[in-house]
Image: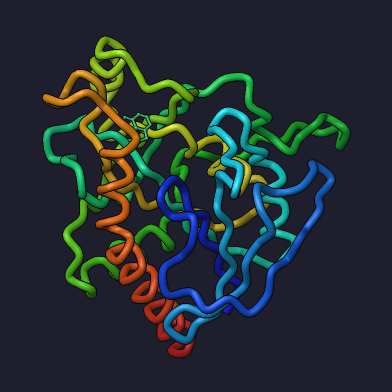
Length: 253
Ligand code: HPA
């Protein structure tokens, strides 16, 4: 089975249930990843885990070294990557606590190092990004959620904004008009970089707040963290089920 990587976002500093066997302090052409990458076992299956924001000092979304993160995971042999992202909910179904497996994204980020291509190859590198998430891996996540009885949205459009501030109410209305269902700050350029390196990449969004202007309460980090803490067990069950689904599918091949 090709190595599986998990990138955890806000609230997923540690992967619940992961028994860590090694830590890899990888360095890459682009610098060091957010944190040494943990290798370990979850539900008897091995994986690599990276916390996107690092620790103990958190790296904000616009300053994450996405190229180092993806490149480091790739250098460890990771070819399938599941990203966990905390998001705000925009469409009416996307209430706090909802788990979404998006099939599309809209990139509103700017000024980030968004490609490995520095022009030195001398040829144009246009990756196909029609479907930004790897279809088989996305479907395996949907299947795992169904098998584990986890309520989820099997489709959704993920808006990725620059941050680190949250959006204005007018910006959220614009995102809704653009067809976006959820909004986060870290989904890009991660997804495109993984595609550039030929890695299968899919994303699990956890709705932690109604997006700006859609809820009754002011948005606070505490509110978001509380939902994430409550849902960490769901993410663990989803990942355990995914790993065993993928292992059985490979054994059957
Ligand atoms: N907007 C952007 N990013 C987020 C949000 C949000 O409302 N919630 C969690 N990450």
